[in-house]
Length: 301
Ligand SMILES: [Zn+2]
Image (cartoon, rainbow, N blue to C red; front, side, top):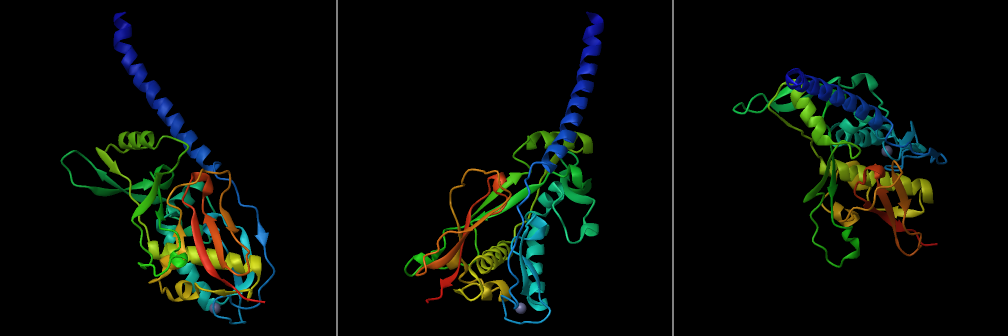
């Protein structure tokens, strides 16, 4: 009995460590296989830039960014100048709002070599210390994923008050919904020998709205044909004129159920007398917000 009293706690601790280590390793595994892939789709080549009309040096537009696993392509649809602009805001979103997720799930990157191996984590070394940053392997990093909520597009309201690309509320998840985020934090606190960890993430709402506008617009061009509707969002996408973006870009206030899809994108009406509205749900499997983007109005005749 005496021996048991002395050795048991020691063994328990060992067991606990082994169990935690086992769980963490399995978490990393299960997360990588957690997200499904998007079925590929390639539209007919457009032959001019869908943003400015140029016809030289055209490249393929990924409707949903490649960095998010997007596989819907619009060939010969973006000129050098415009694709520089769209890549810039997409990269801003990828770096800050869902870049960590991309690292974790091993989604494709155009610049794989540039991926950081270590990431800065905000920690307190002891109760009385100030917050500081330490480098942590990206495999172990406690990621947060952010999506902004909006009101629904205000284009249907008479005399709406427009605020541009602003959010009052964020969808925030520790990656991922499939395991215990608290457990990961507890394990990391132990492993890094720190007192406390503060997971952090940034959001760029204007760039995110530009990206939604680009996704919606390029998808509608692929589905309906270039010239079949008068676009509303080119100034937003190319010149970042976002003062009235809430007229066209919005979200549901309530979350819909998570689905088995990586992303969801569809045109919600094809009534020729109406606006062209695209429903977008990025990373639907995580139970993210649903966005609505009014990309234009159907041309008559
Ligand atoms: Zn262009």
